[in-house]
Length: 153
Image (cartoon, rainbow, N blue to C red; front, side, top):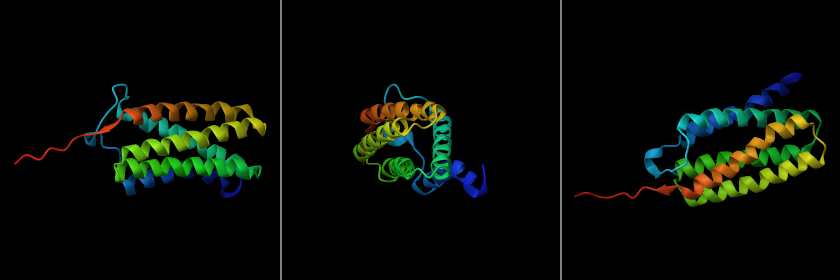
């Protein structure tokens, strides 16, 4: 790993942290969780691992100058950051579900591109859990409902 390219590995994680700082963190007091939603700390560990995996994809795509993969990775990442905004700032759970659906579509396109471009198996093995996680997130999001606010006078 040469030059400053190694910073690409940590870039998705850092941007995620900044997005959470600017747009807020998930506050489960604002919505009704799905009955199968795991505890909050699980998300921290999973997303940290996934963002690092994306960092390795970014690094490799730049290293071998595969701009199709690079574009798909960046597109997928931008959608994950958009979800942070739509869910935490806008509290628009329907729009958030749509964003996750779009993320899944781009994620599947990226998986197909990785397969068709004969990327090393290690990248496929580390990327496939993201697709599974996004399917799970889509299910979670489709069961998420805003809490009804009652005015007591």
